[in-house]
Amino acid sequence: MSIISPEEVAKHKTKDDVWVIIHGKVYDLTQFLPEHPGGQKIIMKYAGKDATSAFDPIHPPDIIQRFLAPEVCKGSIDLKELSKMPQEESEEDKQIRLAREKMPRLEEMYNTFDFETVARSILKPDAWAYYSSGADDEISMRENHNAFHRIWLRPRVMVNVKNVDASTTMLGTRTALPAYITATALGKLGHPEGEVVLTKAAHKRGLIQMIPTLASCSFDEIVDAAAPDQAQWLQLYVNGNREVSEKFVRHAESRGTKGLFITADAPQLGRREKDMRQKYSQEDPEEIVRNVTEVRRDEGAARAISTFIDPSLCWDDVVWFKKITKMPILIKGIQTPEDAVLAAKYGCQGVVLSNHGGRQLDFAPSSIEILAETMEALRKENLDKDFEVYIDGGIRRGSDIFKAIALGAKGVGIGRPCLYAMSAYGVEGVEKLFQLLQDEFEMVMRLMGVTSIADIKPEMVDIRNIKDHFVSNPIDYLASSAYERMQPRGHLSKL
Image (tube, rainbow, N blue to C red; front, side):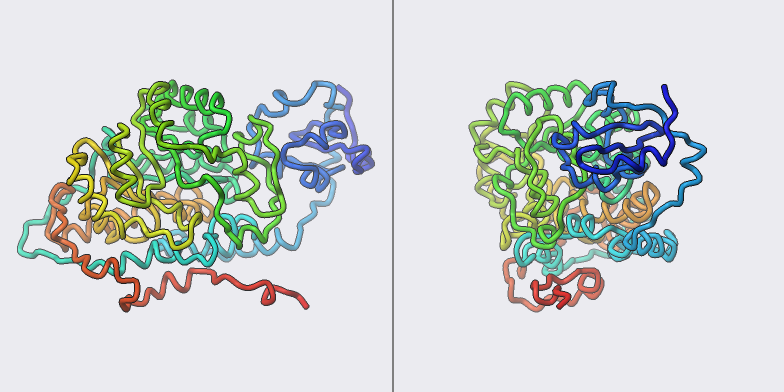
């Protein structure tokens, strides 16, 4: 294989003649450029240059061998000469580097909002917009957290709480805390290792990870990173091509996945305006590459990666899914008690009450608001036995977890806080996040006079104000300080 100088590579930087360097090899991508699923922009950004740093965080290691013919490799780069080339740093990269240098130490993180504010300072604008955005005016997104403030606790005292056990069982798996890492897409927007970071942290904390369909890492990379005894669930966006979904589900089951969570609240994508203002320039997750889906790049990351989702998904499809898998099937995105009852009647093993983190339908209710009435509706139909109800959205404190368990939830999903902790501090950050939540939860258990999950009862919480959206809530200064307010276009103008 010939040795090519960096000066020679630099000559090939037009759309009619584009070479890039990846892992010490020089590739002629001229013919591939129009076909690149991620668009031409990202390739042209590194035309005539070393693209390894941009390539590594996004692509599976073997993607070049799988998708490009051997003849596109022109040779090896002269590494000695390449090391002499000046390294360019964009203004954006410089700001992020300086922000990371000034980050607080991990031991200075005392709550979930600490991680959020640090992540906001060190993430690229497109990553922050994707992770933090909600639908429309972001009312539901904020309500998800605010609703917990309308629930008050009724502590019991003079109870022996010397030994407290926060562990529980979810879908047959013992877990250290009634919480799991819920599915969130595009992990590599925040960290080069992506969802694998969450896998490693979940194992160290004794928690379950829900693997997202739209992960930056491949499904097998995430499963391979898990420990032999580690439980994982799969979140599924149902593909319009059902053969693709069937193949994915069967493969997940063969790899030992313990639960199938079918997302039902995204037949059409909500308007996430913070994200839409960003021009999506990242590479596509494996689901998009695998199906050669056309990608829109003018309305943010969320719209760019979601075009394959089947809007025809309906209750009749549950019957089909039960034929192709023996995994427990749960419907994720339930927003009324009526639909929870239907899920049970169709033979599902449970539901996740969720409004998609406030990212789909603005003014959809928070999961904690409808939890009590959902449990009541299930009991009324004698459907609450062997049927597990989970919630996600807005959980930021150990007391939030306690309130959810008291009202009947089997466990809670933690999403954005995991992304923020991962983006800023990696595996150790996510570990620290769940250490804080567990410490808070166990403290609340003691102060409430309980020593196990089984001791937590509905009468321990006061929900008389849960439906009153006009009651005066306590002001949450941490949440309001961490929240980035939406701005109309005129306030964003440089004119």
